Length: 165
Image (cartoon, rainbow, N blue to C red; front, side, top):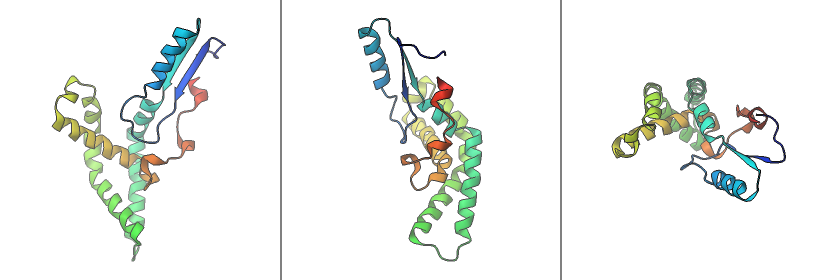
């Protein structure tokens, strides 16, 4: 895309810091409103959430996070005495480690499931696949424990507005 001129706007939704409940409707609404009321204006809407979640759920990111998870668990496992916070972290890491094989085996199918028409008609399969994705996201964000989605390092984000524009 060339540099934007005066009659072009780019509305960018950065990746969220919490799991989305659905697409943010503000961008399409603003796009439609601007194009309808400002003659000759072209508006581009870019939602970076899907790209960011695909990044978080990529095989490379999961593999990297599993190594971090193993290291953190091992460090706590070698301590003779654990503080209360360490005990909580130890239990959290232990539960995540127990889910790694299942996530690696079923994540691709779980993601594909949500692209099918059946996805919203079978509640049991919906929640089974949802839990796989949820576990994968927890593993992927293990380096940010205990904050998880509430806080992550934007410096590590592979996306930049310059590369998109």
